Every structure is written in structure tokens, then in C-alpha cells.
Image 1: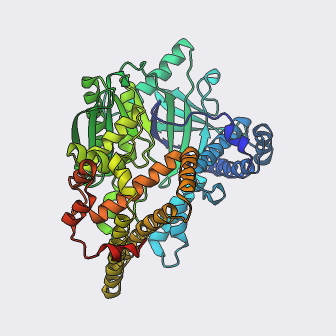
Image 2: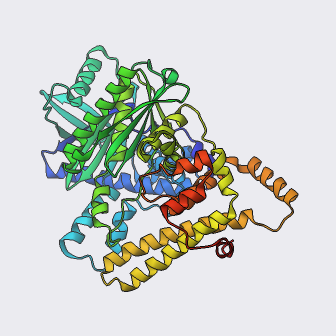
Length: 538
């Protein structure tokens, strides 16, 4: 794949800087709807063709000509197909996925359709959903010089808004735009008002239109860039770090000064979102976003959130049905996006940070230090990261990492836990409960590998001088990676040896302040091993 392809200019994605409204399209003739569906299938095919050519390193200019000749469709549609293909390719690269394995229409739906036991109505529904996603797309980017949009244009005919759809060959189909505005603040009213004003004064603005097929009906999404005020509230007065958590389902908010000091903290419950329909969840999410922004306005602080990607939500047969059901309704990304949108509309700076290890650092460093729960501690790390602070290991944690005997004791605890889980798997007759135990076993083995690998690396047969040189070189080459690995090792060792409860981190005070990890371990679980017994695990 040509890496230069990833540097091509692309349109801004529909994000918090854009206002998007969706409307239903109604056709007076079934023939017109069929012609639009045919154009959508052709355009979808163009996107897939362009994706493959981009992976082969094709130049945008030549590819645009090729698409127009091959599919007999105008250059603007070809340009839109290349843009969508480019966005799909960039998305794969950003997520660290293999672009060659992308499945248009959703890999998840495709994998479900491959299951042989799936038949009847359920299979038909999934196949329709997959085909609509794969073949039901038409897209045209806005153009200010072409009255907003050339291929897909909004036109008012006899006090009824219509979408004029170019079929790609200078032939047009007209569709009525159906959208009932239930509130005076409905975004559709603002959008239409902007169109009418532009038409009156002749000063147009570009609006992008994306047509989608869903449940047999055709919808149009109209997007225009939103004019947000200049940022007036910045991190110069401190920030509010936000961490979203599933158990219990809530937002943890931490207020910090501009120097990174903890001021206060609070939480906003999101339990109502779990009990609501998808439409009501969206409404409640907006309410939550406005609540957070009002707090930021009152405190005159910027907002720091995690730059989250898609998180796993479980799969059928994993033995965790209640957790899976909860995670399916866990609208973490939607809530954070709405907070970002409302904040920008109010001139509040929003800072996105890498979420890596924020929870681990929070629970090990700040939960015992300030006697706060791990969710609040995680939000505090997010806030400090947004201010540019880096988290160093406390001095006594560094000393603990040098105690091979203590780490060996933690390894013994893990091996004992693994043996116990294996016994439970053998005794368990329920398939789903057995799957749950196997998942726990897999995670526990990963923890064991983490500790064993760390001990092997720190116990190589070298002279002390050579070890020092190697460690210094390692820090220079990748200090961030080494620090993260240290936090991970600490999390595994301390959780298994010093903590009785997964949410109570107060015993770690003895480790941080008094260097007494042996006493903390004895208090949590008296050790049956002597020093000689533990030495064999090194």
C-alpha cells in the first residue's frame, strides 16, 4: 500500500463541528425510487472499487477518471466515492487493523451470516441489514459555488421541500423531504432557515448530503459546518477531567487547578440510560452533556476527556449475559461526543487525551493517596494528562519492582488461582458458566505471563555494570513503554497480594509511604510460603 495515499487531503468528517439532520425521503412513483436505489448500488460499488485501487497506490486524479468511465457517472460522485474509500482506509490504519480484511457492510454482520445454524426470519433480517449497509449509500460533498450541492440539492417546490437527486448522468429524480419539527429548537428548522436566507441573498454555504437505505426506506442526512464561538474558557484556569465508567454506570468529574492539584470531585449517574429506549438514551445523553458544560461554565474550566475507540461489548456464549446486555447500552462514546459538541457551542476548550493506563495509574497512585475511589482517581489522571503532566512511579513502587522475592510471591498466588480456576472448569457442567471461567483463566494466565516476563528481563545473567548500561539504554530508547510496563506489573502484583477488595486501595498507603508491601500482603492474605519456597519461582 502506498503510504502517500494516507496524506491526501480529505473532507472533514462529520463531528462536533458539524450540524447533521436526518429526514425521510418519499417518492411519488415506485419507478423513481427504483432508479435511486440503482444509483445507490452503483455508487456503493464505486466506493469498494476505489478502496482496492487506493490500497494498490492509485493516484486520486487518475482514479477519478477511471471511476467515471467505468460506471458512467459524473466526476463529483466519483470524487465522493474516493473520499469515502479514503476515510475507510484511514480508519483501519488508525485502529491498527489490517485494511485488507475490511468488510463493507459490517464484518460483525457478515460473520453472523456465515453461521450455519442461523436460518429463517432472523437470517433474512440480518442479510437485509448487511445488504443495506453494503449497497445502500449515495454521497455528495457540498459546494458553495453550486448553490450548496450540485448532485443532491434541496429545493422548495410549492411550499414543500424536495431533494433533487442527480442519477449521475444528468437525469434527475425528485423526492419529498419528510421531517416534522416537534420543537422550536429543532435543528431542521435552523437548517431550512439557513437555506432560505442563502437563497434570498445569493450567498450559499456548502452542505453535504448522504443518502442511506434502512429497513427498506431511504433517508437523507444533511450536514453543514456549525459556526462555533471562539474559545473563551481554556485550561489556564484549570480543567475538569471526565472518566466514564460502567460499574456503577456514571461519569466521574474531577476539578483541578492549572498546576494539576486536586480541588474537588463529583459524579453524575447514568443509570437512567440503561433503562431507556435508544431514542430516550440519546435525549438523556444530551441532557447529561448540557449538565457537564454548565458545571464547566460555572467553574470557568476546560474539559478533558479520553479519546476512546470502540471497546469490546462481549459476545454470545461468553457466560456473561448481564454484563453483555449492560455494555450494549453503554453509550460512552456518544455521551463524550455530545459533551464535546455542547462545549464547543459554548466556547469551552475540549482536550482529548490518550486513555492508556489512566485507570491503572489512578487506582495505584492517587486512590490511596487521596482516599478516593478508582473511578475518581482515573478522572484525576485524565485531567493531569490534559494539562500536560506525566505520571512518574512513586519511589517505593520503584523499590518494590526490584524485590524479586515479593514478585515471586505474587506469581505463586497467581499459579494457585489458576489451579483453582482449572478445578472449577472441570467441575462446572453449565457450558456458559464454563465459558466465563475460561475467560477468567485466559486473563489470569496473561497476568502470570506479565510477571514472569518481567522477572526474566530483570534477572538476566549479566554483570551489574552491564545491566546498568542496558537499563539506561532501554530508558533512552523507549522510556514511555518501560514506564507503562512497570505500572502493569505493579497492578498485577499488588492486586493479587495486597488488596482484599477490587475497589479498596487504602492498603497501598503502607506501600507508598512506609515501604511495607510485606505487611500489606500479610494483612490481605497471610502467606503460606517461606522465603526459600518463594525463591524457586524466580
